[in-house]
Image (tube, rainbow, N blue to C red; front, side):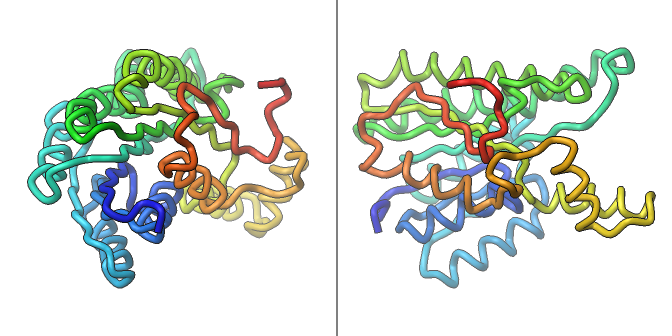
Amino acid sequence: MELAGRVALVTGASRGIGRAIALELAAAGADVVINARGADALEAVAGEMCARGRQVEAAAADVAAEAGAKRVVERAVARFGRVDVLVNNAGKGTPKRLLDLTEEDWQASFALNFMSAVRLSLACVPLMRASGGGRIINISSRVGRQPDPYFAPYAAAKAALINFTKSLANAFSRDGILSNCVLPGLVRTEAVEEAARTSAAATGKTVEEVFAETLRARPIPIGRMGEPADVAGLVVFLASPRASWITGATFSVDGGILPVAP
């Protein structure tokens, strides 16, 4: 129970990678504030965590909006009085050709994928300072380093998040607030499953055939897609005392798909 007595805040925690991270943090002993826009799905995750003996605060809010991010931190403070670990996982990318993108597309992507993390991080820094330190772990994406023209706003926002993580580390590591960034590759989340089912229905293929074609088109050296737990395990390590000399770092969790050296 490496995180016993710690309080973690995880955004985008109702499913996929965020849900896996929240459950792993709870398994490591942390009490957790979980956030997503959908209250019903969030309460379901909270129920799983309570069944494991942890205290949980489910704070439904849209952290893409300034008021929503503020409300989540206020809920954390009201319930636990502190935040020791912040995991900025909220995010979403929607495929669209560059010439079809509108100003609103760019603004909405940066609001969710970048500004939510900026606001939450800066709101939590004073809380972490007051308790002697903490961890900020930003969940970026492979496309933050290997841009995809069909996900240009998402890729640009995730690249900005990588850069911002280094700024956080440079500014606050001396206060014991360690900031790192995790870059997942293709992970088999509910959203990826839904996209595969849509493609399968449109082409007459099975979901597994769609996934097989995806891997043939863009091979992953390790030979499989990732699972949410593959990312969650690293996040829990970075939140733990064992990672006390790691800050300002970027970690790819992608099965080796990035074709460049770190």
